[in-house]
Image (cartoon, rainbow, N blue to C red; front, side, top):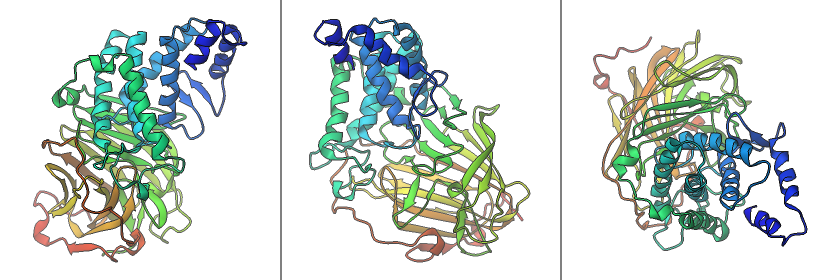
Length: 485
């Protein structure tokens, strides 16, 4: 784009510079499927991928830095300033962009952030405060990008270091030959604009982030909350193609590996899963229906709460193969999410509908770094450990049974497992919270001992096959938490 503008301006193209502005006009015209959303600062295309919004604005920022001075410059600067603020707040604390349709978890998205944030500073986009935040955000993205050099040399096109033959996190069109080099090309562009000349913040400085929340309505229905090193991304009406509705991303700070980012799916098919509420038909370790896998129709839009969290209300449309009698078609559902100093707290409810509740926790098991996540059941939840990092999920209420299905799932970041925590009794609400340790982190992936291929495992519907299970002893229930009857 910028190269064509330079050729036009220099008289080296048969197309006059005025034609370039005619091309830009098209992006500002109202269009249901593509173009600029001036309120969001987002480039729209089918599916509303956060990645391709970023991609487009990188090139437009490069256009300004190449000296574009046509009649669209002023409104382009205004759009890019709004977009810069969106990208800053949609960046998670690990440096990645919040999940949103295709190309989530590609390393080129990390490098494109570095190019966008650096280019925005050079072009003078936004306020001085925006540009200062952009300088820090560029390094936050770089702290993740540098983790994905594979142990045997090649740079990974995705945010994991698994054997490329597994294609974990790959799009159908992703290939190492061009998507790895695309990431490095964006990084090179940022370096030519002076990225490497800025001081690298410490991990503590990258994690020292002001509390903030953003709730987007039509058309994305996506939101994020931040509190220091904690970030969470929520989708109130996910597409179902790449993401499930609910808490899609949870991150615990810069340079860490054990992040819970992107929805998880079983290799045999079925709906996408996030950490969250499921219902089973009877007491005991029965089959479950995950609320995240249902189609959600918004009743009240995603909104920020009084205390800086996010909430939304929907009605549920059940999958065709849904368990009979577990939930009713059109069931009301509410989700509330808040950030804490060390994680997040979530309340999910199905008003006027009591049922046997389960907390499903899909988790990243194998990143290809040589260390696999271990699982340790707690009195009221589960602890995941990878190296010096730990993440704990806790649930309010007495547990009846706990199970770990370590194989057969994957997401953008890893080969995954699934933990289920079955509560005793029935209820119409599930309250759970997540905490992440502040342990030291290595930013250099280690070589895996074996290629990391997975074995077939059961789906959620056959939850006892290949699962590591154990009953929750009566004594495990904290005395301060009574069973919900």
